[in-house]
Image 1 (cartoon, one colour):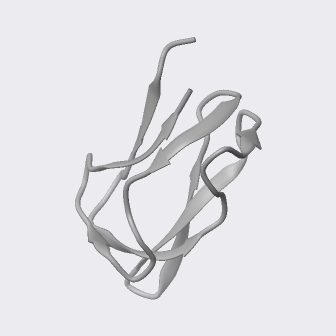
Image 2: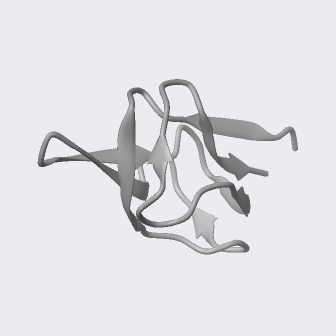
Length: 72
């Protein structure tokens, strides 16, 4: 199966990572929660798959269109 890159929709900070490498996820599962201006923004899986890589750490700032997670 092809890889799917999950991107940040905005400039924010990684508040919480909800998955680990190797986890199976369904379409719509929350992978990461971002925080921007004291608002929590969930980042969801766009398809079912297995988490291949998490490219950010909690508390790390991220930019719009930055790759956060790769699904396989």
